[in-house]
Image (cartoon, rainbow, N blue to C red; front, side, top):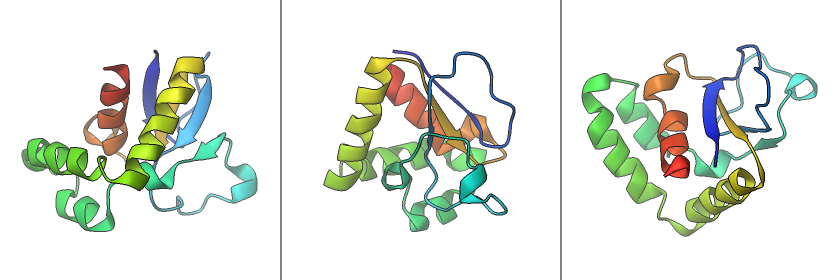
Length: 116
């Protein structure tokens, strides 16, 4: 499995495979006609409450991951995560996020989980 992640607005690289937006909210200023990705998996994103609490604060990263992993066990989110696993088994998968801090984003954590 080859799962990577990047910022939505960054230039695509070669062989990114299936492109999936994994944010709960639609990115500001992006028209749906200009989206440039294959799917929007909003149900796999952290809850609004967890996202706001985390705020991409590096000191909260460990606790964020623990809480997010618990959320990913919820049936709807687990189904969305399984769908991403299926996509990854078919070929390269790139998770997209509007986050400025991709390395500490939920997308990076999802990529780690999927790469196992």
